[in-house]
Image 1: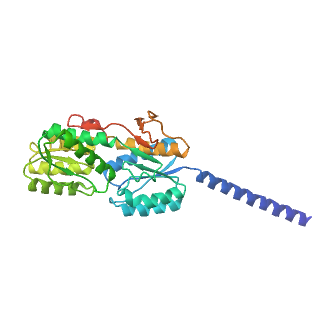
Image 2: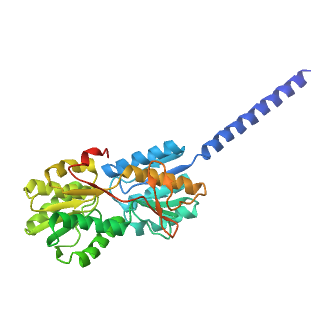
Image 3: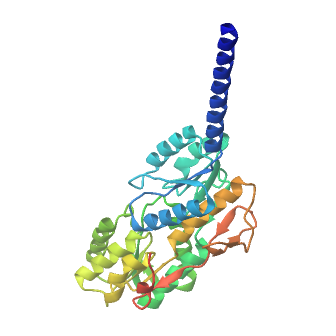
Length: 335
């Protein structure tokens, strides 16, 4: 009788142990079923990418996916490569990256694809042969032309000007500048670019110092185009300090909240951009759709974003037109 009781006890314990293992496995499976989407900016800690993070995280909450928003502390492609290597090892489901140097990221993004990870670019194009989807904030050609139109509206269509940019390897910034310069050759032939585009490493302080150098080197300077969100602010800061806001027109790509002090005194004439939080939201939304087998559709109305444009290639998505910020409307925006 004691043997029978002992056997029954052992059997019960065994069943409980099996049940516990199955339950634990079920828990792991449930956790593994959660979609993890990585959104990697060029760098963290600047207002533009902070706003993008807000949108990406909000999309994660709304859509029920795990969003990891992470990037290097400086605009460094090598750091991005190392971080993506780690993310591949962790087995995330999707990586959306804004590359500091598209060519430098191609091998690691190809490795991510080979590991079964969905690869997207956002904000800045990567090598198109390795991405499954390319999320653009705007049509690059139209935007570049628009920036140069703003410059001419403020400084006139004749005279010396300079271009202050972020990093020289940033594909999106180079695209806007290239289109703007090509447009100026035909539409505004009397504009004179005094020097090659001036890099500032995505730092306002460097843009400020480089603009001071430009003002000293080219006393006849009438305009500055700032491309990258810190660049127009640094240029405006230099113009403000030198008291030449009436003489030198600064325009560029900047957030309204950061631009407001410079817009108010005219050291920055016009800022033009889009809502970066919407771009972050759109990136996560489209990544989740793609992971579920749904491709974006031209004219699709995305919640919290609006209608998107999808090019004929089926993988290039344009969020929408820019918004111009002036001293009259900058205070109406919260980003």
